[in-house]
Length: 359
View 1 (cartoon, rainbow, N blue to C red):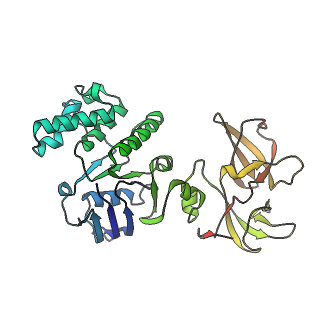
View 2 (tube, rainbow, N blue to C red; view 1 turned 60 degrees about the vertical axis):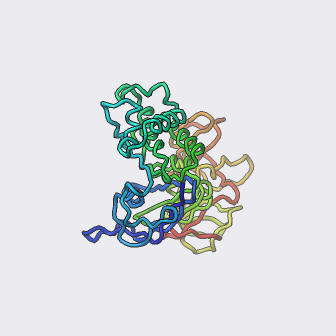
């Protein structure tokens, strides 16, 4: 096991395209870090540079005590799991897991012991003599993990390994990967575009956009205290409600939208009047206004999405669309006007260019 340190790591392709302008962060020994961002943000390029599959244009990459910029992939003591299972169809589960060790000429007894240990961790003991065609998608992904696990690497690198699974299997495999990490304690870097996956798997998350790191923090810190509008909008499901307008003071502090609609900001620390801002409201920041109290605004209910213990209300306020997360009791019918209050002190404010404002 080892820490991974990136110091101003840069990737420029021969065409002149700058994929990574300069990334710096540390993955502690035994830590599970997730890199997340939209397609094309550079997360897989960073992972491939750590693996040695992409050359580093500038900067320093350390794995443990070694600078590995020019070290071949086979000598970096890492194991990588890809989106594709890439299992050999003519080999059994045991043979697939053992193959990398056989190429390295490990003693047969040691290979069998490592395969047995990995199969126990991954609950594959009853499947060792089956071939990939006889396995489900989740079982194949566990075999791919097992093939990496038997190598006892210093670092695990996982590149969107759950993308090919359905929603139920993805949820199960997320728990499986977290359990494997807890048992092995191996340093782990995980790449995904799915923010739910990032939130549930990451001890810390690196949020990327256009090759640049936007913020690095724990999942709940990113959710509650985003550094900018991109992070706030990317992290969270349903997504953040973002409303552009001007702070006004007449009649009490409020945000006035372009169409003249107003959102009262009572109980919310707001920027000074006259300032143009983007108001960020998480779906749970919107509450049904209690009878006899002032509502922050009134909106038309367009549709209701029941998901069991809560419902999502799709609201229309002038030309804006909002989503509110509310308890399922006494939900009005679509088309009704709904009085909405803001949860005290919970609003986020951003400058028009996306910078976070802290009133």
